Length: 442
Image 1 (tube, rainbow, N blue to C red):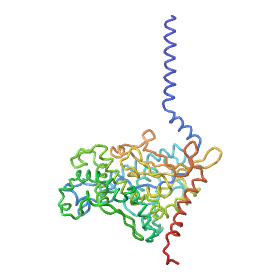
Image 2 (cartoon, rainbow, N blue to C red; image 1 turned 45 degrees about the vertical axis):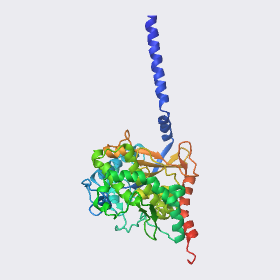
Image 3 (cartoon, one colour; image 1 turned 180 degrees about the horizontal axis):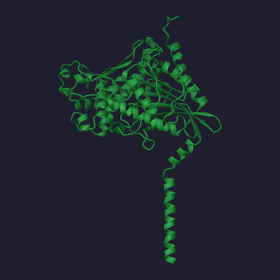
Image 4 (cartoon, one colour; image 1 turned 120 degrees about the vertical axis):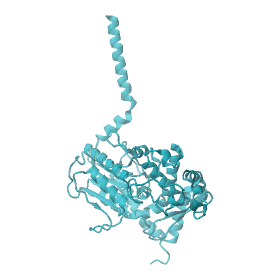
C-alpha cells in the first residue's frame, strides 16, 4: 500500500513539474497575451505593396532578351496581378477579417458605416486589384469602393513615385547618400558587393548564351559599374549593371513564387535557399538604392506622409488601406527614420511581395493612446505554398522601431512621440526645399 501511495505521489510531482516547465518554456506568449489585454485596438492604417504580378518578361523586355529560355506562362499580362496574387491577397484580407473581429474593432461579416473604412490605390491594375481582393476577403458582404487617381472623385495620386522638388545641389547630395551604401568606395563598392550575385543570376538564366547579350547591347554585367540618376518630376533610378541584373532577378523571383518546382523556376538549375536569398537581396539592394536614401524618401513620399497623418487623426476611421509598390513601403519607412532591417523569413528583406506597413492605434485602461508600427507579410515559404492564413497560422509580423523614439514595455509609442515623428518627416520636405533652393529662386 505504501509503495503504491509513494508511486502515485511521485507521478503527481512529475506532472506538476512538467506543467511548471511548460509554463516557463514560452514566457513571450504569456507576456504578449497579457499585453493584448491591456489595450483596446481603435484604428488600423496600412500602406501595402501589391501582391504577385507578372514581370515585364514579354518579348522585347530585358528579362526576355537576356535568356535563351522561355519564361513561365503567366496568368496575367505583363505587370498585372496574377491569379495566384489575387488568391493570396484575398486570403490576407480573410486573415484580417478574423484578426479585426478578435480584436473587437470590426465584427466579422459586418458592413461598416460610411467613413469607417477607406481603400485607396494607385491607378495601376496590380494596385487596384490588390486593394479589391483584400477588401473582398476582409469585408465580403460590403460593397467597398477603391479610390484611385482618375476616378470620378478626382482622387489625387499621392503615391506617385516622383521627385516633388529638384535642384542640382539637392541631386548631388542625394546621389552621394545613395552611393554611401557602397561604403567609402561608393558606387564602385556597390559594384564589387553585387558582382557575385550578378554572376549567379547570369548563370541561372544562361545569359551568356543569349544572342542579344552576346551582341553587347547590354554591356558586360561583370565589369560594368552601377550608378544612379535623378531628374525633376521623375522617379529616380539605378543605372548600369545593377539595373539590368535586378530586372532579371525580379522576373526570377516572381517565377520562383509562382512555380511550385524550384528547379523548374530556375530553368533547370538546382539553386540553394541561400542562392535564392542572394537573388532576393539584389532586388532589395536595387530598391534601397532607388528609394531608401532619406533625402530621396522625404521628397517622394511627402504627399503620402501628409495623407497618413490625416488618416491617423480621423477619429471616425477604423481601417484605411493604401496600395502601391515596394518602393512606397520602403520610402515611407526611410522617411520616418526606421532602421531598414532585414525582415526574417523572406528573401525580399525590405518590402516583401504583398507586405503591409501597419500602424495601430491602441488605448490603455487610463485612456492614453499608443501606437505600434509593424510589417505584416507572408514568409517566402507561405508565398510559395499559398497556404491559408488563420489566427493559428498567421502571416509574419515584425515590430519596427525608429531612431530616437522611445517605446514602452510593450513596444508601443506614445501618441505625442508618434505624431512628433510624423511631423518631423513631413517638415523635412520644407527644410529640404529651403536648404537646396537654387540661388536665383525668388
